[in-house]
Length: 258
Image (cartoon, rainbow, N blue to C red; front, side, top):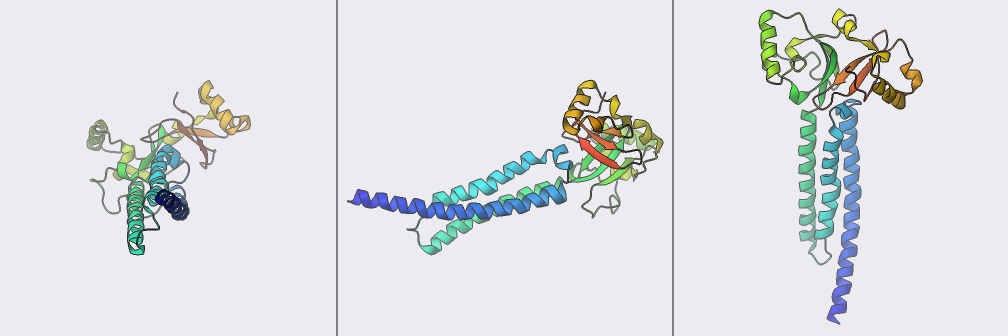
């Protein structure tokens, strides 16, 4: 008889825990959707999320927030616990979740993209935590307070001393694109930029095939389109495609280097 009673008690505990865990899962999923909108719409607009490979980081964050929290609730919830103890336990789980989510979002905010910078023969996506700012005044770049990813040129008209400093910093892993003090206003007609542009037909044959698979043969055949290799600290295998007026038409995961 005690064994039967214990089995019924365990079944009741499981049902109770499943009910609370399901509610916790729904609430966590709702928070995760809001966080995804913040990350992928505001902080990392396409294609920056792909270029900085932020999806894998967000999936880890999602796993902690959506999976671990409800699982802890499933383990800890019991109808035999006093109400105050149950609220304290579940509140602690929620607090741990929020702390993990807050830390993850803080890290993503500090690594958000801030600028596309043309550098010699490519367009470089620069993240906030990659900027070299000791040389900067305030603000460090013109639209520092904006969430938009701006476009700039890495100014080639620098003094000899600055070029030596740039070489020294490059050897330390700091490219000119990461130095806001060297940025100049975006200008589509700058000769260095115009000479770096290439028609889509200049892509390697295997990359043309890849582009056709992604965008279609008609896209590849558009003669007015030009591209620049589009790179970040995470990947080198993208191109930014412009029309002859300088409008950014699209970007694709295609290797633009020959």
